[in-house]
Image (cartoon, rainbow, N blue to C red; front, side, top):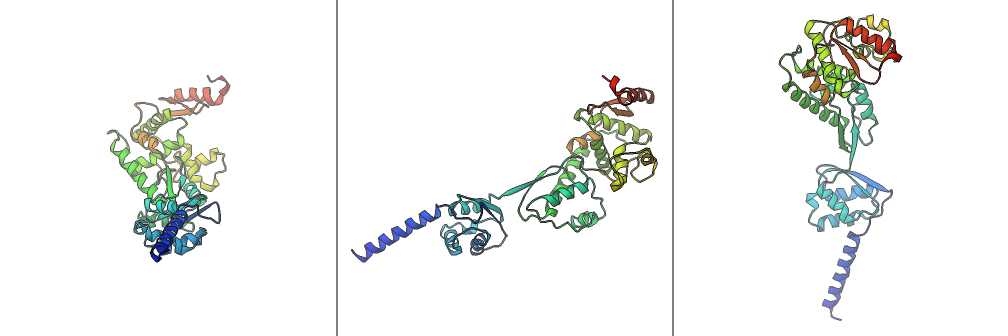
Amino acid sequence: MSLLAVVAIAAILLASSCWWWVNSPLALKSPSVDLTVEAGSTPKEIARDWVDAGVQTEPWLLYQWFKLSGQSRQIKAGGYEITSGATPRDLLRMMVRGDESLSFVKLIDGWTFLRFREELNKADGLKHDTTSMTDQAIMTELGMAGVPAEGRFYPDTYAYTKGTSDLAVMRRALHAMQKQLDTAWASRRPDLPIASPEQALILASIVEKETGTEADRPKISAVFNNRLRIGMPLQTDPTVIYGLGEKFDGNLRKIDLLTDTPFNTYTRKGLPPTPIAMPGKAALLAAVNPADSRALYFVARGDGSSEFSATLAEHNRAVNLYQRNPRKSP
C-alpha cells in the first residue's frame, strides 16, 4: 500500500472519528449543566468554562471544534443550559443562535415594593445585588434619586438569564411602569381632578387595592375622582393599612382610622403622599378614565363586587343590606 493511500485512509478515519464525536452526546456531571458566557470571552476560555461547569470532555477538543467549525466568533454572550443527550454540535449551535436558558419571575398587581423585593430575593439564578440596599439607595442606583420606590415598578412576568442582577430586573420593571403610566396619562379624560401622572399613579394604586371584580374598577375610580373633585376625604382602608406598616396585624380597628398618619385618608383630605402598591395596566387606565357616575360611596356585597351609592342615605341602606344584615342580601 502506498504512503498516499495510508495517509488518505488515516484522514478518512480521523474525519469519521471527528464526525462521530461532534454528533455524540456529551457526558455531563449532572442531568443539566449551565454556564454564563461573559462578553469578550475567547473560544478557548468558553471551552474551558464548559468543562469546569460539568461537561466531561477535554477542553482542547471543544475548543478545536469551535475553531474548526468556522463559527467560533459568532458565539454570543448569555446564559446557557445543556441537558443529557446534547452533542458538541448542539452546544455550539445553541451559543451561536443565542438560545439562552431563561428563568422567570412573576410580579403581581397590587404588591407593595417590599413584597416585590421579597419575590426577587427568592428568584433562582438572580444575583441579589440589592439585598443590603435601602429602597432609597436602589432608586438612586436606578437613576431616580429622591423618588419613592413604591408603585414605580410594573407588575408583569420578567425573563432573565442566570447571573442577571436583580437591579436589571428592577430597571426593566421601572421603565415598563413609566411607559404604561405615560400611555394611560395620554388617554385621560380632560375633566380629572388630578393634575399629574404621579397623582394618577397614586390613585391607580388605591383603585388596584380596592377592586374586587374587574367590572367595578372604573366605578371605584369614579367614586375617588368624585370625592377629590368636591374635597371629600377618600376614606379608603388600604391607605390606612399601608400607613400602619408592620403594626398592622390583619385587623383594622376604629383607633387605626382615627390615628393620623400621612396615609390616613380618613384624617386627611386628598391623595396620600405616595402610591400604596404596584398598580396594573387596568388600574392605571381606570384611574384616568373613571366611569360616568355620581357615586360617592361603595360597599362590598360579599361576592367580590360592590354596591355604589350617590348619597349617604343610599349608602347606609346598602351597608345595612350587605354588611349589617348579610343573610338578607340577595
